[in-house]
Image 1 (cartoon, rainbow, N blue to C red):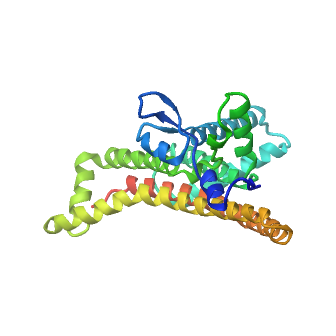
Image 2 (cartoon, rainbow, N blue to C red; image 1 turned 60 degrees about the vertical axis):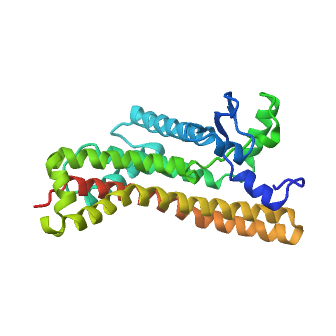
Image 3 (cartoon, rainbow, N blue to C red; image 1 turned 45 degrees about the horizontal axis):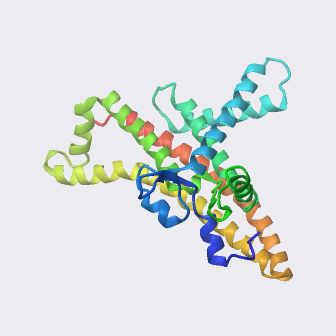
Length: 289
């Protein structure tokens, strides 16, 4: 719930600020105390909350499916095995429907992307103040930090650093397989000779270059924009709790309704990220003649 000592704008800024570690102006390394200080830390700063939650959710994903795989058997399946098999069948059907080439890496990659992105998005359904308050209490009691300078964004996909990082990973694979399947000359030829032939080379480079660059941008910004907007709505609803009984009650109804609708959004965004990855890699495996 919004703190009584905070204005609405301060509450919003606090919840949208990452816990950032980097180098201060005096050369020392530490956590940023506000957004301006985090921005001054530059490129080599790290959003600790984004990294921590991403790694934690990745470990949870691997732990769960590794446990299911170790206990899998041909008899009557457990609920966990049923769930895992359903997810795997769903991923395999998606790959068969969108990928026309032959590459044994695509299905495991699609599986990892879908589950990992879904878990990141799922954090948006946690109570908006729960994890930040736990982080504030831990920072103050364990590390002796000023509780007002302890920030924690629990949803990694609301951080463009995370979404661009994943998108650039996919983009690197697209470039790698484009060169592997077509050769370096074929890859350059596709950029320079498609679609207007050698006489339209400047236009070809411009159009194909835009299309190539648009792949990671579309992947990252679509996920970030949708999740950031969803998080912002949760924050605005939380502000209503401090505006009296009537608005607080109405805010509770809004929160339940938005959370139910948001389940569709977090699943859809994970599916879109996975599907676009499969499609882009399929395009990388195709040769144009």
